[in-house]
Image (cartoon, rainbow, N blue to C red):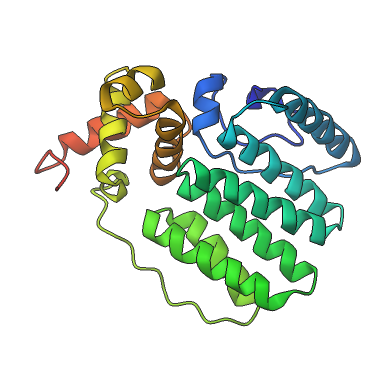
Length: 238
């Protein structure tokens, strides 16, 4: 499914039309802004679910489930939304997409809170906030923190890691290795062959790279890596 094909009223904010890149990004769901937008979103999600039926694509499945959960929550079905968001989190976890998994938990927390399950909501939001902070996805971490505050929980001020100006220093060793190969023009398949990783594992790591760098395309990953190398010291610390 090509996420760029969503209607303007209800599409993720990913700016790439490359299906492979779209699978590796973590689109931010805008949500439908009108009844027509809701119908369009449901139509595209129906198509996505049909396309994915029977395929072993956990990350793509997680993104579609996340979007469906957003629609359910907007349609005032918080219990169903929470359950689906947690399923999406598990699918993302299966391919080591920690940022996508935590985003799903943030959504699950919102849904559980709306359903009156405040303790479960807080537990999911606390986990999401901690995991997003550990991953260096600070904007998304702040979203989870805001939801926790709405539930009356105190959240400490975020502690940003040194980033060298563009977030590259928040990448793990493996993520940095994969990002460097992306910057060299390698495809996911080539990266997997070079590092002896499955395509799913590469996709999961690259999802985290996109989120941590706040980018949507492979070209932007290459730009971030190049910028980091141009800074004083040049290389990323071990």
